[in-house]
Image (cartoon, rainbow, N blue to C red; front, side, top):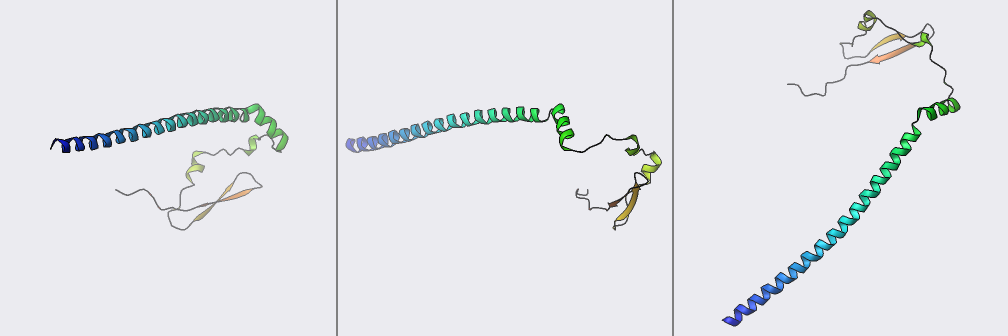
Length: 128
């Protein structure tokens, strides 16, 4: 009887030792993976920092103005080009109530007429 207890004890001891070694190796591999992920995270943070610095350089107003003058043929805005509207003119542009689109003519100057097309769209919000 005592020999059976020893055999069972040694079998359980062997299983527990094997399990502990498996757990130890798994923890070591996870630690290595953690170190690699931390290094990758630091590299990504560094690259984000560099990209932000490049973005700040590329968006400098002086540099953009210089590029606009060099590559684009833009002219200054004249006061006549700005549309000034009164409240009465704004309120006459209402959304059409029917389902068909209506065309509203809007003129910004005497020479150019722009057509805007408005249409009703279904409401995507759920109704209560």
